[in-house]
Amino acid sequence: MATNPHPVENGRAPAGALPASGNAPAIGHALSVSEWRDFWALLKPRVMTLVVFTAACALLVAPGTLSPFLSFVAILCIAVGAGAAAAFNQWWEADIDGIMKRTADRPLPAGRLSRDEALGFAIILSVASVVTLGFATNWIAAAWLAFSIFFYAVVYTIWLKPRTPQNIVIGGAAGAFPPIIGWAAVTGDVTTLPVLLFAIIFAWTPPHFWALALFVRTDYAKAGIPMLPVTHGITETRKQILVYTLVLVAVSVAPWTLGLTGPIYGIAAAVLGALFLALSVAVFRSKSEESADMQAEKRLFKYSILYLFLIFAALVADGVAA
Amino acid sequence: MNWTPEEEAAFVIRRRKRNIVIGIVLAAFAALFYGITVSKVIT
Figure 1 (cartoon, rainbow over the protein chains, first blue to last red):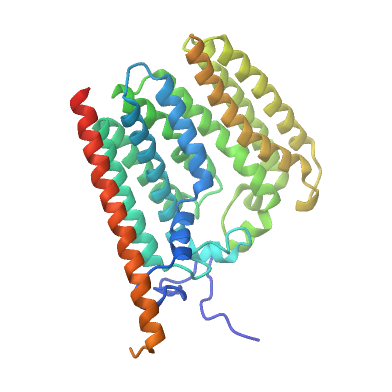
Figure 2: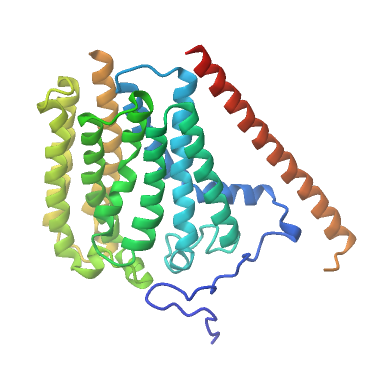
């Protein structure tokens, strides 16, 4: 039996265990089309769509004007900044990603890119996105973008994720910054509504990720990541999903009850929230122990993605109608 | 490192492609900043 030359201790391989330059980057580091695709994959483009959408919605409903070109640049910078944070994440977690089936084919664990390449890429994109956003809009928005990259790369990825089962709760804040940045890009300020939009994504993140974590918990356990289903069990996770869903429903209708949005948003938030709550109750009542049987969790996970798109779309529709 | 002629030829082709891509990215970046400047001046 072959011996693993890079033993993993507590979910993390020793420093230097992964090759400095992967196995594929070809002769002299000249890059092929497939390697450019790998750089693109480092940005986690699917996650980026949600970031772009929520930032764009905030930018559209913010009071004030920003030219279409500068709005496009602002969205581009927010997307690139989010991609840079994702590249930092994959640079740090390359060894853990290699253990989990869901992430084993990412460019770093698969050896198609080196860690050094990923780090350099992440740094260049971070600096470029922050500086460009600052020049294009204002330095308040740029500071929020810089802070969000730092928060995701350092506070969440390096500090919290490997240490606490509450990693998703606090780390979720990193994904909640785009509406604040989008709003600040237009107004140069952050007021109550963008803070509530932040709070909606913040409260949405735990039920969204814990629903996923329930049916891939064996992967997380194998990688030594202290996700809630691994550390506190399935029943406690289902209870926490329900608790955070209640918080989410309350926060999501707050913009309407506070008079910051109109009835289009308010009714949409109430209906979408009620559906979210119904699916969370189904998860809470579920007795499934096997990942393959966790239909309620899979339904909630899929719906949670749709929910976020719809609630922000309702916000824009409300703004247009007003 | 000793390369075969085929390896060297492949390297030259890929290096040229990479340089073209970097050139395009830098040109796009310059155009982006030009556009930002023009937009802000007009605003």
